[in-house]
Structures are given as structure tokens and as C-alpha cells.
Length: 256
Image 1: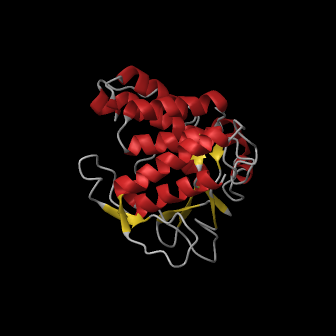
Image 2 (image 1 turned 135 degrees about the vertical axis):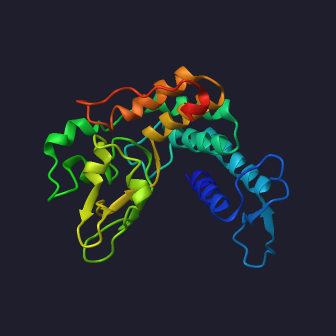
Image 3 (image 1 turned 45 degrees about the horizontal axis):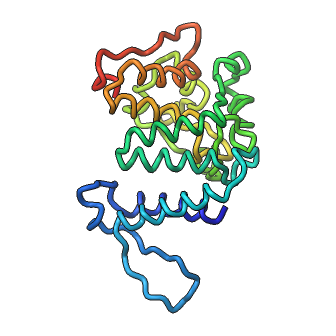
């Protein structure tokens, strides 16, 4: 658990405070100090992106050898699935497409549960949002959660603060996209939509993310058909099934 926690923390740190991983410059790009001791007297220097990724890799390898649970409903704890998920994320950012796909598939062999938003559209009431399933999805009972990391009061609580969509973001959603119907509220005063997510925002590793990693890596490896199959496994759960039509792409550039 400790090794997994350190690996996930350093993965966040290196990607917030360091440059994006680039194999040609990672050995010289500066990131954050690597602290592996509790000594207050140690001298700390800034480590490179490559050095931080090496520590993450070592921690994940050792953690996987010690963890004996595939997945736990207490998903704030690490499991084999969460370690594979972190591996998938790391490999994706390192552009190791085949490894990222393989790790994502290992996750889905353990856990592959989806919220199908269509199951809840009849329960939806814009006045009393969020819909029923959302209340459960922002807890350790989140059906899709591989590894739960939540941010309290992340989005919106009317009367305290509000996070608005940009018009460009809103325009990316189609009218039959249940995400915009469930999670956005129109504010007449500001002529804009704001996020309607109460209490928690899920920021951990999830089943949909693994499918999207597979979709991207298939496209990166020039497998258009496989990429779109993986992408549609997510989209079909988010678009109104009365109007849903599977997405298609003529080539991998269009798929990406």
C-alpha cells in the first residue's frame, strides 16, 4: 500500500511540476526532488523526469509483488487492478502504446463494470440533480472505480462557488449526450452552464479510462477498427440509446 501510494503521488507530482515525458529529453528535463528517507538532514536536489519515472516504475514493480488482492470494494486501497491501472497511465504518457494497452486489458480482466447512463434517464429530474446513480458514484461504491481518489466540493455547490463551462466546451456535447443533461445546469443570470456535481469529484482510476486508453493505443498502433470498438464501449453508455449510433473513423488520424 505504501509503495503504491508513493508511486501514485510521484506520478501526480512529476506530471504537475515536470515536463511531459519525452524519451529524448527526459534525462535532462527537471521535475521534483526524490525523497526516499524521513531524515530531516538530507540534502535535496531536483531530480529529472527520467529519474522520477524510474522510481515510480520500481515502486509499482515491488508493490505488485506484494499485493495479494485483485481488487477491493474499499477502492481507496491499492490492488493489483490499481497498480495495473497506474502502469497503463504511465505507459500511455511514455508513449509505450503496446504496454499501455496490455496493462489496461489486465485491469479489465479483473474489473469491467460500467454505469450505463441510459438506465437512469427516466429517474432524472433537473430540479433535484444529481440523479440517483450519481450519489452512489461519488463514494467507495462507485461501480466504475478501480482506484478511488476524490476531491471534496470540487465542482459546484450553489451559494458557495460555481464552476462554469466555457461555450467551446459546451459545444462539444451533442443534444443526446446524457452527461450534459445530468451534470450541467443552465444559469440564466450569466447565460452559461455550470457543473452540477455535488460533494465529490472522482479523480481516480476508472473502468472507462481503461477503455479509452485501449482506444487511443489501438489508434496509435494504426488499428482503426479496434480503436473505434473500444471507444464505442464507452460512448454507448453515455449517449441516449434512442438516438445512439456507433462512432466510425476512416483512418487512425480521424479516430484520434
